[in-house]
Image 1 (spheres, rainbow, N blue to C red):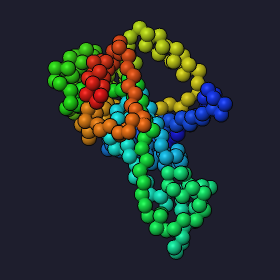
Image 2: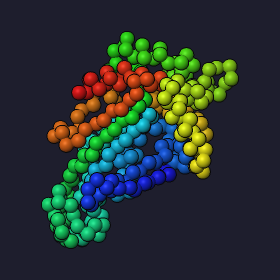
Image 3: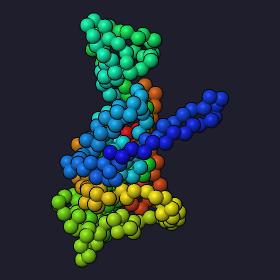
Image 4: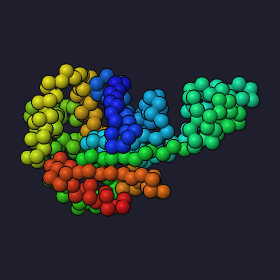
Length: 285
């Protein structure tokens, strides 16, 4: 799995606040391993494991853009409260009746063991819960077949798509073995995102043009180097297949209002109608 990290600091106060931003290639993209049976649920657990391996700390904030939006929802569903074994988190070596702390110089206040270099092995058996620090969804992809949508609303939004996208999405939904074949046949209309001609607003066209020019100047690795079938076509199958959960049935992971979930979506988004996002937001508020 390829991981890109950026560290920067906000300087609004005398000390400043450091932010550690991590991005990774999902299965099938870049150098990440293939995962033909990937689901929204499996990717959420992949993120949890990655965060633990990188030592991102007790809490981390999730940001999902486009296809990453449903994955952020999956994190809210499956890993909002993560049970972490004390010994595993702090790399504790248990010997006899005591345990030596080898991974950290100190234990955070929440454990009640601040500053101890040696704790009892009994303490190491306790689990504690960490919550996500928050989540942000930016123009997230929506599954038109989510059971929480009224049939008339999802149908209206679906029919606003290009005819070629309606066909491609249906193929991915009902015949998941055929998206690659369908989208690579000249006689059939391919998915607009794959063909490079998605339904964009004038503002998006201007923005995407500048982003495209910037990407051409960068010497970046091809994200689809393992083939379009295992990347964009697999995305179609996952995005419009059967999810393990309905976004409109999510429980509030921040019961004490210590954080929140943010949803940003453009009014003129031609790819995912904003009406669906407004319905989800209303259901969850």
